[in-house]
Image (cartoon, rainbow, N blue to C red; front, side):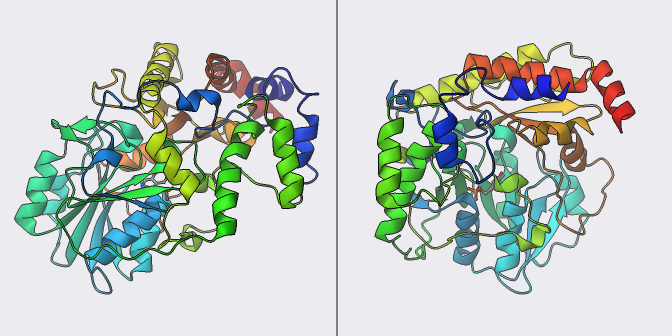
Amino acid sequence: MQQVLQALVLPHSKTMSRMTLTNLTHHQGTNRSTPIPRLPVLDWQTFTGLRQSSLPCLLNLPGAKYTNSGRASILIALEMFGIGQGDQVLVPTYHCPTMITPIIKVGAEPIFYPLNPDGSADLRWIATQDISRVRVILAAHFFGLPQAMSALRAWCDSQQIKLIEDCAHSLFGSSDGRPVGSWGHLAIASLTKFLPLPEGGCLVNNVGLPNFPQLGRPGLKAQIKAAFDIVHAGVNHGRIKGIRSTLEFLLSLLKMGRQPVAAPVDDEVSNASSALEFNLGPTHQTLTLACRWIAMLAPRQRIVEKRRQQYRFFAQAFQDCEFARPLVNELPDGAAPYVFPLWVDEPDPGYFELRRLGFPVSRWDRLWPHVSRIPRDFGQEWSHHILQLACHQDLTPDELNRMVALIKSVYSPTTRTKSKGDA
Ligand SMILES: Cc1ncc(COP(=O)(O)O)c(C=O)c1O
């Protein structure tokens, strides 16, 4: 059974033709094919389609500035607000460590608030708490499905609390009739989730704060490496066909052969032994030129269209499924989703099997220590039951079909019975 499942994740053909590349690109001792990409990867199609998207793009907002990552943007936002020791920051119980680490870094305390069924902050619960030391709330458009923000912003203004609108999952879209990223006093985004880049973030300053910091410039080596990583991730996933030999030549030229270059690090699901050890990466550094160039010039309509199309494909595929259901069936008009949130009734041990097979899925099950259980909190339910399936623009129809087939195999009653028996 394991061989069957493995075959579903890995490309069917080209095993031989990929051998040389595998030697070049995989960690030493590994000779398996590259799995379905969890994040966008460079391909010739990256440069096709209409330049502007039908949905607003956060990068077009007047106060937008590039940063190195989404987490760096959160850190800079907290610094711009002057947050430090003694301050508290409200954050959702449904989170990944990258949302919390910047708060710890500035010396503030995260306070976890529960979520309503639609993913919005439970303001009624917050009203029962002592919020005298709360100076900021972080609110996210989970999965790239824009949240209503007007009520939250009005509440923030009435309480003199600053809103960081977390658009890491929604580079495109609109909420309550306005572009995502325009509701927060400051808003942040993560470029690697929507563009084929190894790094990148954005900070939107909607209130004219004058203290956006001076960011350092990456050196020449970092510039070259970023450009190389972009191309390499594409080739490594069987895209941008026809340039493999050029890449091999460049590799030998740059003497990087012994230094494997990976696709963007999947930090949300990395193996850090503790969430508290989480690495923020370069926080006060500008985006490399190659990344900036792609962020500015890559046509955007294809990204929006494809993601909407992939989402609908999954929604259809998991309709009437006995073990799972789409969290949100109808894709909202103003959404270009980051992932497809699939609610699975009994996610384990299937989830671990999917991860082991290199399936492009993640789950936010590594909660920050001391997140307490709050009655009627949907955030903590989601952290167990919601699988976030990649639905980016660079997944092929064949990959999408294999993803559905694999999930259905892993969670089918016969497989479950067998794996229980195996254990
Ligand atoms: C909701 C949310 N906010 C912020 C971040 C941080 O973004 P980045 O990975 O670009 O640092 C992430 C990363 O996964 C995220 O999911």
